[in-house]
Length: 370
Image 1 (tube, rainbow, N blue to C red):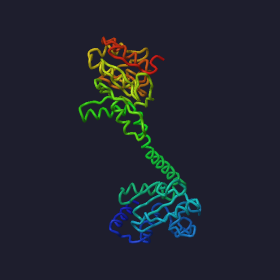
Image 2 (cartoon, rainbow, N blue to C red):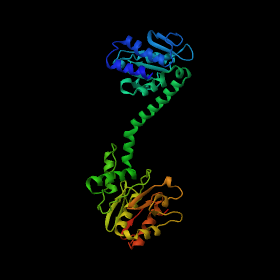
Image 3 (tube, one colour):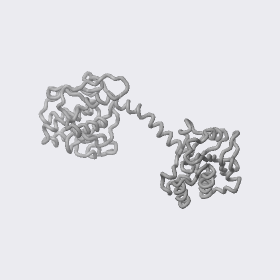
Image 4 (cartoon, rainbow, N blue to C red):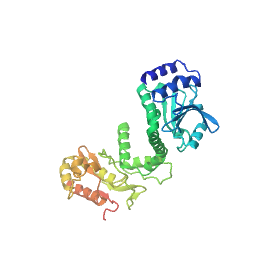
């Protein structure tokens, strides 16, 4: 097969196939022979097969005399001119697979698929743009007599069609997914954008500023996020594991979709309780880096370390499910905790450093008392 395909590629490059007949005799039939088809046996290959008042160039029969695959041949460069009635006839006759080729371009279709004719194409192979081995593999997958006869060719085509349809649907859903994502930004998205902004400008925006920007990208009308009055608490967190979406919360300290708090007389804002805790701990760590061991010991819970140097120390039982952020170099805080625990962590961190919770730092987390 490799030698045949190499010869065909060279001849295609030299323009050796001037019409449909030369493509059929010089490309299609030799390839069919290599794939196990006997073109002298009318029970396998039927040329000029009559279908619905027109003729299909070749009908390939698998397990019985009934066609399993239609082949329509065009002149080189004319594959796009394939007669779409071919697919209609194939559909009405229950033909599982169709092939439209000009010798260079080989397109395999599922006539019974949904959508436009392009959407029913399960694979397009261009001989002169693929390696010889890849061309042989694809042709064997969809066109070998053994696989057509056993039904494997059709089964693979169906799997490929579903995969393509799924990817196409995912692509169509991207705008809606993006709109929802920027409407209620995930912590990780905010963090990544903050880090990139800091790399470019040398200044790190607050999480509320990033959220406000993301919200402005949404095509839906949403209430604006109130920007923080102060920018005193940049965070340098790096998420150690993917962060799942936080649902928007409500409290008397929230403005729009952000959570407001006070820190050393300045009003600040974060997207949610997790980000507020991270930003507060970042500021505390910057002021008291020598107290980090004391802070970590003070905020330790009954069954886990809330602040530690590794994810495994924070979540020893299930580090694979960990959600943690590095709030200061070498130290992480876990996020898989209730708001009341987040408030307790801040309180204990304040106590360990002499900061007055409720005076120097004022924060009201939603449901922190439940």
